[in-house]
Amino acid sequence: MTQVSKMPVLVTGGAGYIGSHAVLALGDAGWPVAVIDNLSTGFAFALADDVPLYEGDIADADLLRRIFAERGIGAIMHFAGSIVVPESVEQPLRYYENNTVKSRALIETAIDAGVRHFIFSSTAATYGAPDVSPITEDTRKQPINPYGWSKLMTEQMLSDAANAYAFNYGALRYFNVAGADPQGRSGQSTAGATHLIKVACEAATGRRDAVSVFGTDYATPDGTGVRDYIHVSDLAAAHVLLLETLMTEPDRSLTMNCGYGRGFSVLEVLDAVDRVTNRTIERRIEPRRAGDPGELVSDPSRIRAALPWNPQYDDLDTIVRHALEWERALAEKRGIG
Image (tube, rainbow, N blue to C red; front, top):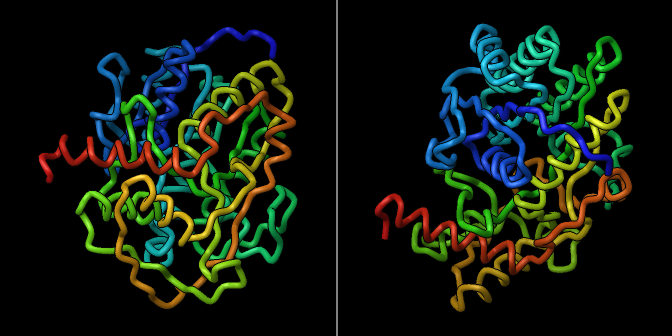
């Protein structure tokens, strides 16, 4: 890949789970970084002391203009937003406000300020409940919840903006993100998280009594839901490579799946947690949750072709081990256990 000049990058939601790992990946690669986060779900302790943190809202145009001016921002990685699917069904207008309306405001302010490159944290929820697996980027987009729609709407805004202005973007549709920084610098810290590996690690460290298994009658090998799990540090690395590509090809925008292309069932994940911890987590069998597809696995061909991306942690036990190490460190940090 052509060498690029490492311009300052603004990371929205950079004190959150995935955002903080992107900040680490950028910093490790020598990129100047600043963060804007309202700390509603993020944590200042997730950032190194030398990372400038602006506490505020991504729709605050005055604050954004000040950050752009003070830091000389040339690119944005946008992670800020609401991400809990059931909550989006209960509070759809909140999700359209946080994820779509505020993203529109951020995009407009960025373009007005001459920011040329934008990377968006999208989701496999844009596909809804597809009847094909693995899923390519051309699979029909038919979200089944406001969360998925709010992200798909933002993708469309970015596409239209790139057609109208001197601006390009990358949108990464994540599958199931898990794990933690191998050096223990960040991890999933949000209370009440619903991701399976996070929940299982909480159970393994005594913070939960058991793990619920929602549905055992899917058309999958063991009857439980199958998902494509990707290590958060590999995901963060993909963002840095995507930024370099956007800078070297300013007339090109990219929308890509980000997963490994292999699925694991709920029971296989829990077996991995049992192996890593050398104990057995209690499993509670419960009915299916409405809207949960049986299988969501990515076809990562496009990202593999577009970027020199070579995942380092494509191993379920490694993902679990890093998540567990962070869970133990987090409990110590909070004086739990």
